[in-house]
Length: 456
Image (cartoon, rainbow, N blue to C red; front, side, top):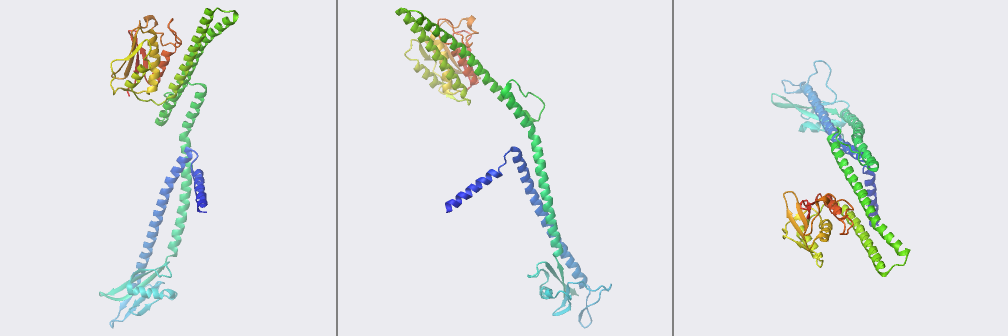
């Protein structure tokens, strides 16, 4: 039973949270402004009513002092020591609700205040202010009367606090009504102001969504706007630029792969047509099979290039890697090939680059494959730190890139005749390096490629 009750309580709390949680930023900000205003209104209203109650109480006490003082001036003592009251000079008589005691004698008592006689007599003996236990809305005050330094009588006055209580009640109700109207106005005003403030943000968001779907080349630019919106415009422009870059990269990669896939597929299709057209000699069959195998190998390389590019692009957060282990791992993988891969000189153990080890491997692998195809015996990897970056140089002892081809080696699909390859390795390496805020450039001497990476 207890578990069921606890479950119902938790469900109720969760439902209340869902219902009370603002559904929009405008509602949240408006409610926050309303809550802050409500706290201040409640504090100010409570303070005002406390001050009013204290002020009304002080006025009641001042009234009692004034009344008892006026009656105390009427007390007189004759030559025999007898205490009595003389009549007021204006003939108006003594105020209602006033008692005058001379010791045990009552010199004056009001005719219609019998229920307060005992309380007045008791207070006459002690003095000061008091309220009867059975009538807290009546306030009494006892003032001793002294003549020649001797107390000869005590004047007690009573006042009804109903009028003060009514005034406090009306004031409290009025202040509550004013507070409610004020809170309503604050909520409506803040909601309207927040809506007006957020309107440019909503317009910019809709515009950015429309541009991202139809025309990625549009930008918000440097139009005059508030600083906060200017920052938002800059961020949206950056996002649109990144999206446009991704789309262009995809389009470029698609075009490159379409071009490169078409070439081996056309060659394989032609070879199959020849195989079907007439009987072939064993030598011709072997050559045809070799051509088909080469085409399949080239297709596999293109597909691997596509996957590598996709994996590299999916990694959005830059990593960090130590260069020594990555370079030596590549060198170990290359063992057993006719062309040696060496790391020279030994990299600084603390040398790091601001790129993940897997991405660095995918950047260097196409460069190493390219160098191995042209090298006579050795490919060398050299890592060092410069003032602004970390560099990895991939060099070989081959003839180098002819000067007339230096501007074309990074063109997608370009491959120097006689050495195979799909012509996508070097463009892929450069694209991956630039995606990591680096670059791949051809050494001016033509026999080395230099990978520029951000320091780790």
